[in-house]
View 1 (tube, helix red, strand yellow):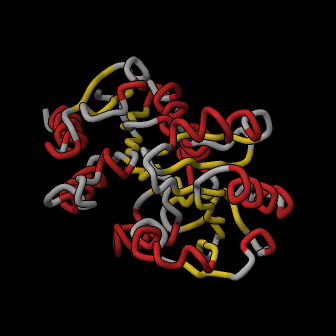
View 2 (cartoon, rainbow, N blue to C red):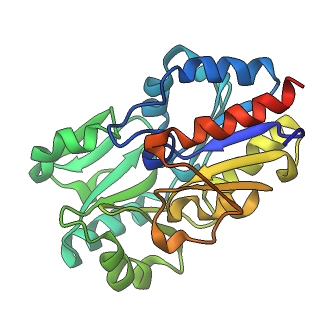
Length: 268
């Protein structure tokens, strides 16, 4: 652990508790990492503006791998932005509305965009997408966007993924189950590992000097990429074996526990 220079964590069900809270005194942990010369990265399906809200004034000292790698910010500066073609996200939104019981959200760089008929879900969406608008004809919206996310109100994300999304879009896009009620679709070859490689290039370090934590399929590439990979104990059972090590659960602040061990090696 002595050579670790970059530590990344997924947010929901990994770093954050089930109540959506950071571990207690996590700001102190970030300060200790900074003092030890270790860069912290939040690697999330959440967009840049939401991650900036979560970390507040400290966000400019972090790497933020947003929208599963669609946007990457390093210490306050965007270093990568991979947009989806307008006709692609419009086609995905039309398909989801016509052929699944899922509700599509187009993840614009400035705000997420939902269908007006889905506005009763404002509070559900806004937990993850703090900037949010609704439009009458979602598949007709156009603007800068890097992801389509699908909300599955019946908790059947894996079923819809297997039966509809993967067969229709799996060859042309990166598609991943991001939780029991979420599926994410991003441009091909965009994932959290790509974000880690971009941050690593910026820092001049290799994957051997990286550690990462995750719980679900949108973490899989990142966990395979880094030398020191951890699944939290509450991970999706289908992810078993996707990391070298296991951390305690998010409710036990497992990410923070492992980071404390890394910091302890720097104090000897």
